[in-house]
Length: 138
Length: 426
Image (tube, rainbow over all chains, first blue to last red; front, side):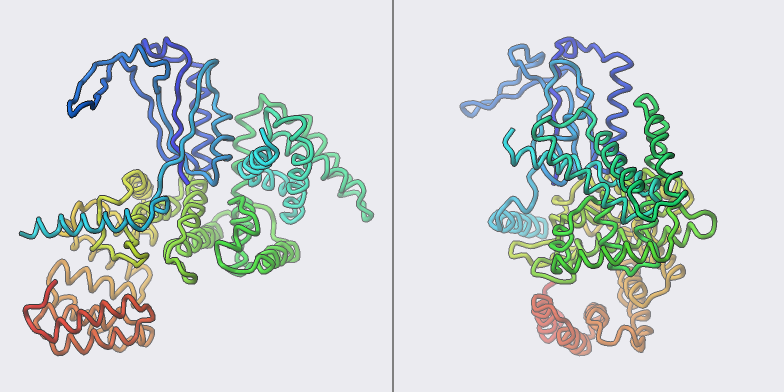
C-alpha cells in the first residue's frame, strides 16, 4: 500500500523562503537515502513557499483565485513523500525516523488504490472509456 | 498507545529491521538459520519489554544488541564448546565495543554487504525454486510464514517446512556467507533476479486462485528489486529487471475489467496507467542502458514494455522498434513464445503477411502444440488478410484450447464474426 506523507514545517521562516541549514539538509538526505535503500521511497518533492502559490476557491458556482501567502492558514504543506509500505504502522515508524525540526508535523495519509473502490467505479470508468472511443471514431 | 497499537508498531519496526538484523547476525554466526532464530528471539524480547519501556530511540541497534547477547550466551553455553566458538564469542564482544554510533557511514557499507550476502545465500542454486522464493520473502522481504502462505495459497505448515528444510540444506551444503566473485557472480545473480521476477509474476498473473492478480506480491517483488538495485548499482540487468517490473506494475489498475476479467494491453485505458511507476521504470531502463546493458534479457523486455508505456494511444506504438527488440531477444534467448510475439509485432509494423510467414514457420513447433495463442494469432492475421474461412477455423481451434472461459467466449465471438465475412466489427 502507498502513503503520501505530508511535511508541515513548524518554523515559519520556511514560509519566508529560508532554506534549512547544511546540517539539516544532510540529515534529511541521509533519511531519504535510507528510504531508497529500503525500497520504500517512490517519489518526493519540496514545495516553494505559499507566497509563490495561489488558491482557487469554488463557491456558489464561481471561482475565486487568491494569491499566496496563505497567512491565515496555520498548516501549510512544505513538501511530500510517496512511500510504498506494508502497513500504516510501517509508515508511522518510517515517519518517526525523519530528522524533522522542532515543531514540524508529518502527516501520513493512505493513497486510494483500485481495490479500495467497488466494481461500480470500475464499471463507470469502462463506460466512460467506451464513450470516448465511440466519439473519437465518429 | 493501546496494546494492539504497540504490537503493530513493534511488528513494523521488525519488518524494517529484520533483514539487516539477520544479515548482520549471519555474518557473525555463519549460519543463516541460527541468525534468523536469534533475530526472532530479539523480536520476542522487544514484545516483552517495549510495551513498558516504550520503543527505544534506535530500535535497530537495540534489537541487534539483544540478538548478539543471545548469540554469545548460546555459543558459551553450547555443550560442544570448542576453541572456535570461544574465539567467535570473543570476536562478537569486541565488535560490540567497536560499534559506536559515530561509525555510521562505515556501518552502512557493511550492512549493505551483509544484505547482499544474505540475498545470494537465500537464492542459492542448491535450493529448489520454491525454497528460494520462500526464504527470500521471509529473510529479506520480512514477510511472516503466514503471509507467504496466504500469498501463494498454500497451507502455512508447507511454507514453514520449506523454510526449515531450506535452512538445513544451506547448513549441510556448507554454503559460505559471501557474495560470489568473478565468473560465478553472473550465474548467481541471474538466479537472484529469477527469484525476484518469479515473485513478481506470481502476483502479476497469478497461476492459481480466483483473482488473476495479487498486487501485494508485486509490491514485495518491486521492493526487493529496488533494494537490490541500491546494493548492486553497477549491474545493468538489476536495473533492467526493476524497469520491467515498474512498467508492468504501472498497468495494474488497467488490467482488470469491472467484473474482474483480464483486459489486454491494447484495450486498456491508458489514463489508468500509473505514471509514477512508468517514470521510475523508464529511469531504471535508462540506467541499465547507460551501464551498457541494453541487450540484457530483462533490459530488452523492459524496452519492449517501455515502447507501450511511451505510446499515448495504441496507434502511436512503435511496432517496428518492438519487432527489432523481439528479434534481439530471440537471438539471446530463443523461444517459440518470443517468436510468436515477434510475429505479432511484425504484423503490426509491416502488415499481416509478414507476421503470418513467421507464424506458419512456428506451426510445427512441438512446444506450441496445444498453446491457444498460436491459432489465435494465426486466425487474427488470416482475418486481416481476408481469408475468413481459414481464420474462423483457427479461432475455433484456439477457443477449444484455452482453459479460460472468458477468453473462450471472446475467441468464439471473433470466429463468428469471420463467418459473417468482410464486414466484421473490429
